[in-house]
Length: 267
Image (tube, rainbow, N blue to C red; front, top):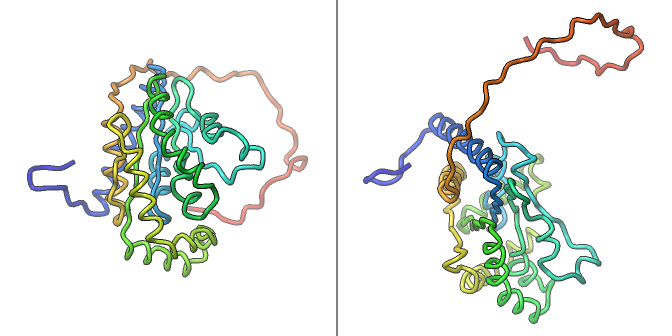
């Protein structure tokens, strides 16, 4: 993707072509993961509006949802709040032949829960101590763990927030929590730095993605992801359509069924 002179500059048309190529490689990766029985977890973290959902959408656009699964957990229930903190995340980990994409993850405790006061200082400190051990345990069990932090500048986040406010189709993306997080920019910056200090380990490093330009971020992240799991091409048997049954079949009268009204025709 890059040469001696630096990154390649792509037009929108070239971006779409390169994205299509990378998505084809993602399909090859999923087939390899299935054949080899690998277990892959990809964690996506970053500030609000950083583009996590957009890059996940491009990763899953052409893959099989039974193999490449997105996990975006909501607020824990009262019962879950009494469980071991990692328990509800562990329940979502992949089985053999699966890839799980966490749209936010157990790192909620290091970010929103800590900054907003949703956990105690003792719970936060225990999380920081436990997380490297938790992740080493996952990797020792054979799981491939990849962690991405999508980094967006103050100015670009401001622009994206305003764009969401002005666009009725995107206003649902702005919650009161998002707005409060915006007000606590420095608190979140300090929380991110402390999180990295504890959990950016040699065994399980954080990979930072510059995300001010969404298209650039998507291509760079996906191409990097493909490099993290060595894969080959799975040989497929030639597919031939079987002959259709020739037995006569009399359909029921059309007026016995309910049809969706034809309001549009594309010709």
